[in-house]
Image (tube, rainbow, N blue to C red; front, side, top):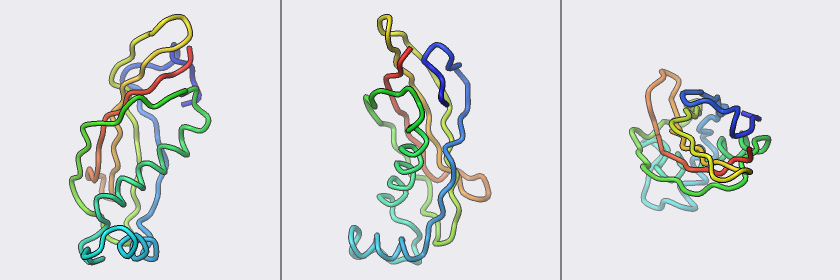
Length: 130
């Protein structure tokens, strides 16, 4: 979404890319951050969040987003198994101009599994240049 605040439309949907739950990464994450979790339970919630955060960060590198103000309403629906390909998408829910040079974008972010089922979602508020 390399567009300025004024060019972004409410209802616009942006693809954030895809990322697989790699078996090696899952094992390393569990060992480092979620002792007691087992891989047969799928990716732990913290890893699902990390996958979303990576997709979001990589996507936003070319956007006129100047600051992430907040991330809230986080929901984890399921723990995807090793090998599952997750797709990210962002839907613009609202926008509010703030002065002449910037505006706030409120967006719904979703991670979907290969079957299109919701795995994770959250709301973000970000400043975008006008």
